[in-house]
Image (cartoon, rainbow, N blue to C red; front, side, top):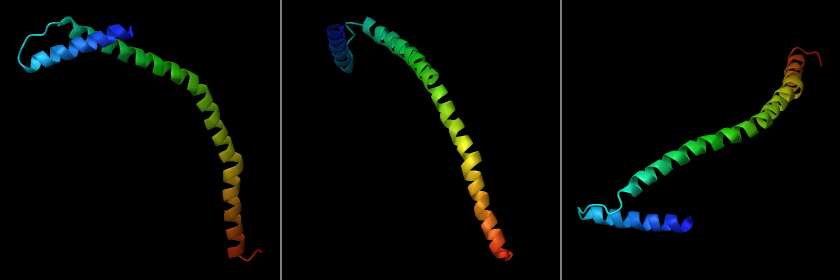
Length: 94
């Protein structure tokens, strides 16, 4: 497979070199073959991205849930605690 890709790349570069001098392409079918391969790889990359998202979403959901729970039970009461201390010091309860 790698050898075929190397040969096709060599043929394509030779055709590109010929086009610089306004000559016709020897292997015109390589252009359409590379376009089809590019479209296939693009559609396959969407499938891979979907699989990765399907794998990561449950993990991210539990991480975000843990962050929300920590905000409710830790951060919010600590914020109120500092507000209460400032309020009591301001009004002379301490």
